[in-house]
Image (tube, rainbow, N blue to C red; front, side, top):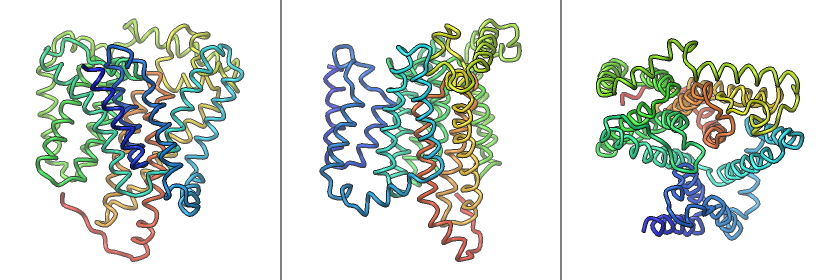
Length: 425
């Protein structure tokens, strides 16, 4: 029965994609982040849902008069000149080069094709998300897809007294409890963006419930990296709040309630953060990081290739930074850091230029929350091998789209010399 329901969901998404191509981009996000086929028990579990949706999306684009018009294509192709997208293109080429010269081609090429599939999905986002409203719906779809998984984990944690760890969808890139904790924390700023852009009382209450259960889910993943990410993300959200004096007491109350209900075993595990040099997992990570850095010095230009940890360390890198360096060399690491840090700077500039005007306040909300989400990723990535994560590249492309959509409004606002206004909400 469950398999039939999942098949109907995927079939429905395909039908909607054929009728409205831009909604197909949202459907890709649903399948990519919720990974519904992972919950199936039969043959549906192996269903290539993402590939099927990509095929439907390609068909929808070819038959749609709008997407075939030269004016539309010219407008969207100009977006490809954005520096972020150029750097991402160079990074993809670097992945191709390191895969070609990989020490373990049998694992490098499948990883490269997996990365390429992610980048293909991003091209659809660039092509079809061309308005502020569509961009908002895409972010809400991503936020809701991840949040529903976190709600499932949060409710399970409450029912079991937080004794069991919360995991992501089976077969997904973030099934591991540590990975799922970081994904959940990254998603909280996107939920907060939805909250700030909505004025309906019941919808806001629903979003607040999603945020609460997401925090519970992340904490009860028993991930120490997730805890650090939650702490920093919470402080950044308070800093972005328009009512800081009200947000701080609520934050403290929430932390007291959360920590008061967590078991002693959880407390003992989190306490090892302060004595990491005596903890076995932390020691093994330091050893792997050292091996990865030393290996990169031996092959500084091409590294070991994607999934090169099979050859170098026999253990996952447990750091996206070391992973990118050891597997793709110094050029890959520099390109990856350039697009990531450059995007943070770009989002900060957008936030600064738009935060004082009521007409551009939406830009400040979008850029501020995307920035917090990326910072959450960078913290989690310090302890986990997340350098190829699709959600990272999705947010980078969304940031490029935001810059393109925001530029005319910011320029008009600057040209008008409008007096700064602040919204009280």
